[in-house]
Length: 258
Image 1 (cartoon, rainbow, N blue to C red):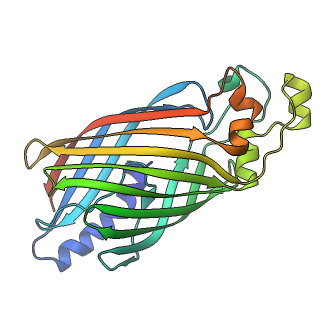
Image 2: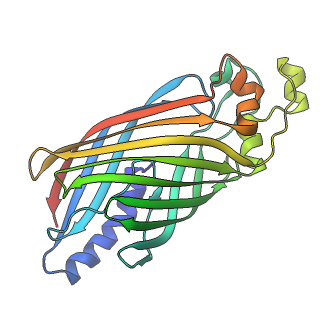
């Protein structure tokens, strides 16, 4: 998930530098919309949330492809086909009220920081991987590897779809999927201590379309299936949980030059 305030804070200084070095200037595309997503990982309930996006391109070059579920990243190495840099994400927390008031242990909203790698195999096929560490909140390691097949006509339209494999360490999985002995006594759920490993597989698709050079739209849809210890979790198996995780969003974009 990319968040506008984080993105803007990182991108604006880069825009100024790019503008100074590039006589063509820089195009900036800002997107704003709404999305629906699970309350927390493994939740059966959904929440509405804002959806933001920001992209930049030099001159009349087309905007670089980014799948909608990539974490926000800043390239420090960019050869054109290979890209590497730091990444940030904000992961939803979980309160007792989200699980019917059961005292399963609160998970605070977590800033996740780490790195990502993109590789453009061809104009139509991309590989992506990222690994992030929770700073507070779940305190665990979480990451994913995936691929995207892309159809595009410059910036007129871009459609992508591709699979994901999601993995995490035991700290992450115990925060969201585990049930401690104390919580088991208080809730009646069986105690459960998951290990790290693959916790989900997903399919994500994205679309952007320009109605005019200035105005456009963007959206995404994503289905995630929890597997392994996450699928076996008493929380996921309870009436408050689900192994099927759906999310999607839609918004408008505006493009301007700097």
